[in-house]
Image (cartoon, rainbow, N blue to C red; front, top):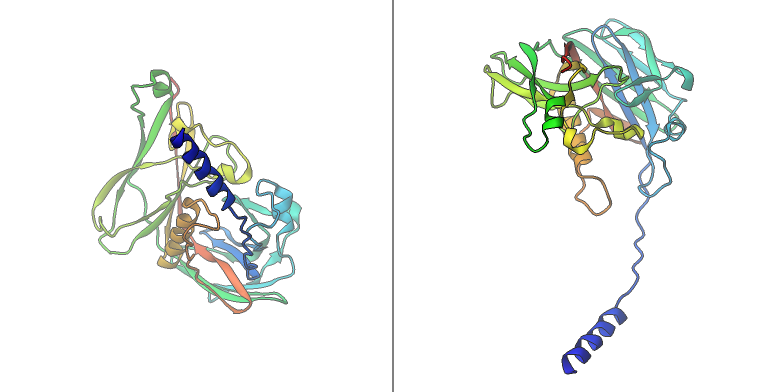
Length: 305
């Protein structure tokens, strides 16, 4: 009986020492959240929203919640050194939807071009923000193709799934950086995998063969992701579209740190990741960045069985 009595006594001692702890988390610093991007032959677009406290009510899968967070009273002036334009504020029915983002401002005259340089100034009663980006020269792929997924544990699924591959020949000049997107069939948005960024630090001037993984971002709009066993793979019969975009170092660092923060799963008890931005706030605070993409497009039809 003594061992039983000991464990019973220990249980009551431990449970009697439990104490509820209330943690008062500090309020988030009010910040302007900026997602601006420009691509060759496309008008500059900007998404402006507000941040919120970590535990503030927010339905991330609700389009209305995202619309409610947008900032509509900003003056945005952009320039490429020759053309200067004041962006138009768009009503919700005219928002530009791309990369799972509501872009609620759009240039009327300023389009991107390879090797272009661009500046932006954003003003609201609470915030003054400025920044710049570039669109590097294009870095074309050599070729893309598909290969079957090898998975002997599931022959039926193995016959349906394929891996998309690309061959890239890197120029001899160092410092080439790329962001990769894909979509399939009638999907409306370009999506990316948890790792969408590549640099030539280890392959400068060489040739690399690497897979193009199927994107995972539909989850951000409450859409279904592929089943776990299909992660990164495409299916027989798919028409696959690839967006291969050269980027500058500031854009690379912005999305490298953003992907690092996203991959950690968030939460108040994890090590915070500082997202590097190419925007500067002279009034208020800013989160986000201004991305220039030297975009090239490719497509491939995977034949059905």
